Figure 1 (cartoon, rainbow, N blue to C red):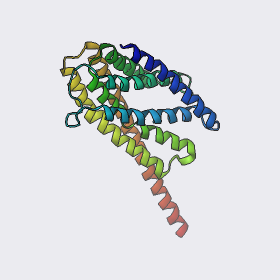
Figure 2: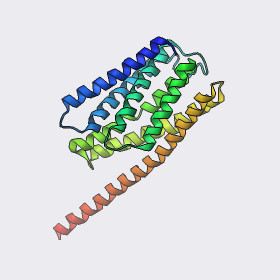
Figure 3: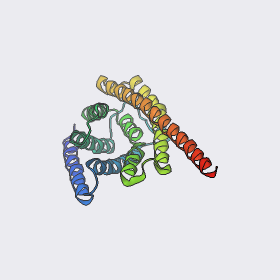
Figure 4: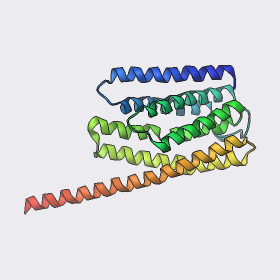
Length: 236
């Protein structure tokens, strides 16, 4: 790994941590998780933007496959690695520690870190960042809305469904294709292993999201029926 990239990761960790502390100071009445999700949303938007800018040819976004990483690609990865390190530590100090989220962070750090060490697979790695962060703003939006008092509202339901739709396309359509390309190409074993691991974690989350959507829609239908019965009862 180049020295400049190492320095960028260190500076990134400090910057994300500082941004979180400033956010906590500004939003003193909000929870620890709320402030962390604000930072996570900023990273997701920044990561998708930088990943899009680094694409060499939009006719084939993941080309060239199994090639040496460009400096721009490594800088994009360094930004996300620094964020993942910050977020992993931050989540450990949160109210609830999620094992699947911790595993996701560790696999992602290992995979992106391996790409930076080998200085290979830049196109696939950047595409991975683009795919995994595409749905993140909506993931955090649904939780932010709950704390702002919009739990069980049409707005919160819309955020839930939008997140589920984007996650499904990104992780269960584009994701498996990228995993196949990564496994088929002449990439280091560690990169292949982490690509497969990340896809398995995504599949696990996908089934959890399906259950969440089913619950939300069932709850909304039940609420609508109860509301109609209540109105009919008043009319009688």
